[in-house]
Amino acid sequence: MEMVRATGLSKRYKNFKAVQELSFALRQGEVYGLLGPNGAGKTTTLRMLATLLTPSSGTATVAGYDIRKQPLEVRRNLGIVNGGMQVYERLTGREVLEFFAGFYGLEGRLFRERLAWVTELLEMEGVLDKLVREMSSGMRQKVVIARAILHQPPVLLLDEATAGLDVFARRALLEFVKQYRALGKSLIYSTHVMSEAEEVCDRVGFLYEGKLVYEGPAGEAMAHGGGSLERSFIRRLEEVATQRTPEALRR
Image 1 (cartoon, one colour):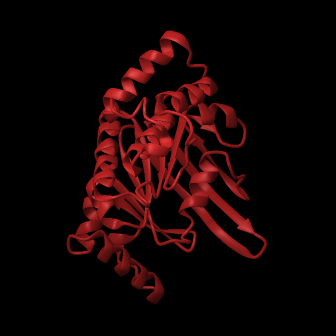
Image 2 (cartoon, rainbow, N blue to C red):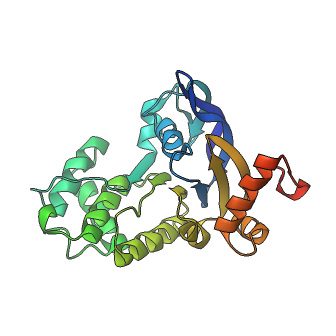
């Protein structure tokens, strides 16, 4: 079952093409790596999927809902985690989550059940009653993730989600990605850090200058690079630049 389907998705700013005719699919229960350097169009793509930007052309569906025609339904079925996301520093973790729960109609018993669920999933027992301003970066990231999944969205978008995290917080986030996939959820993992994608992604798409230049299983992509996604990505760009496109990489 497809949880995200982008079809000819494009975004232009005057003479600049941020995303060009992007088409790909995210299946249920998988992690799709949207990989590329800074400026490749990853964030623009995710913002269009999240209905925060209107495509110049093309469209997409999220959990079966059209991003152009049904933006509210898309948002109800979506969670977003960006690197460097901020939370209210004068509130406790519990207060932050209770505030955001209101946007999803989670109140009373239902909120308490969801709070217990994210607390166990993210191991947040020592975080809930601490003021955000007193939290480590890892604790803050747990609150950011918890507020993004409190409504248990079937699709989660992670955009450079490990940016600014220390090694322990980064490890916790990668383990969470695996856990959320194990629940049958679908995730788009956007990053320029290829080693992270190697660990958590089932399939990958290489994005460069707004274009998808490769798509396939992560293991297959790594094989093209001698066991490395980074080498595979660089090799693919070299092939694009020289117009050498082996049949094995043609998608």
